[in-house]
Image 1 (cartoon, one colour):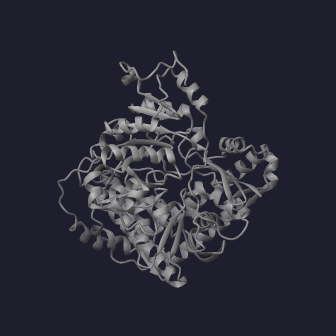
Image 2: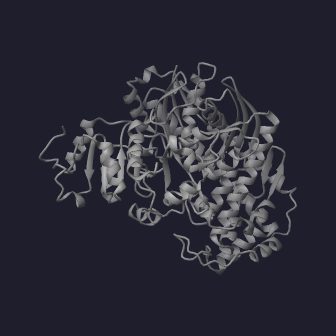
Length: 622
């Protein structure tokens, strides 16, 4: 059975073609449109999937979409808000202003700078009038409850309108492809549960999905066994850890859908003890469940951001996220007796939370689906509905996007008038240049599926120089609080990281952090965060031989089995997809060199005077 899976159209619209449970092609529309987190029908991605696999639309048996009809979604949204109104009436809040006053006394004096902030205790000051409004709208119980309910109703109205709009756009796009009659819908969290479990390779696993909103839910707990999924618990919206984290991301001045990772990085600089008890006073925890009080009231987090250092606000939200999530997982692991945990949903992009889950004594092994956000939902349903039964080995890789021939690449280089060479030892050339201090973009093979660059659309640099986090981010137009992530030879993993056992496969997809060994901290400081952790990608030669060979050649030169791997893109642009995208980002980012297919291209500013490279105008590829 061949199924076209389409992810939700509201953001990060993605298309996947799956046959009998195996992903043939999957890519986000943003990679083709060049619009970050593209919203709308993924027509370009669908056409790319059909072309790459030689599929005629008539060959597709089902089109899978991970939301219900808009009328049903609107019903579920309204039911969620009605339940929230009832619960708010029965919540007796502690003395919030007393707790905040006590928290202010815990704010430490700081002098060490935090890159990206004007001062280590920087606050989000908004002026007296706005800050007074935040205090009352977010922090005075009678007023804040009324504001929270108003904001919840406004959210519900917008969400219902959005579902109606995307419903119409989905049907129109499928109608144009003569596929509308094959459309089949599902509630949202089944798609997350399916991708996490079916891709994991576990015969039996606890399936945990956590996101912002989906079909009346903010998460789910299921058990996967023998290739089948059984739901144990629904986590009701608006008690959403996704919304919880979106609020603080927005309140600290970042885009809530794109920049949650910046909050994870920022949190490591702060002291969670300043505000953690304040946030926990608004969490009602029960065995295997929780409620978040006034969770859609953004004015509360804005009040905290104006009143407390940004780093302490970030630290407290990160800590509480970890506490609530680990409590949830611990309960259900004990309840089911299943220590294999698989994770999906946008919140599981939080690599530090994933580390805390894996560190639980009760957890034996952890797997996180590589495209854990809504962009991965299309593959989840398509895998589930075409699954032949039983359990398969885990996915080996996520290189499921388009690839380009040497001839296509060469034509693009010549169109741009770039000098290039086709080295007999491209691997050695790249390793030598990186060892000498050059920044090299790598474009090779099929594009990675999901939010992480996994070597085929990556920028590589040595990890010996901690200052690279400032100057390379500036060159690429980025502002980041996290260090660059390392890519590490599989064989050297235990030399570099602590606590890998049971999560090594998750680390192949860069979905979890680990504490670093003293050796790693000493030799690869650019890849180690201020809290001593890193988010590695472990590479096996059988999975990506060219990538592994570069690392191995670099290790032979330096004695170090790691490089920095950051996504090949400019700030606020998607990761590159085509040779044209790669050349453009290469030139704009002033990257020293580009290894693209079998070719090596020095930056034009560095090409003059080199006899190794040939002018594209004067020579063809050998």
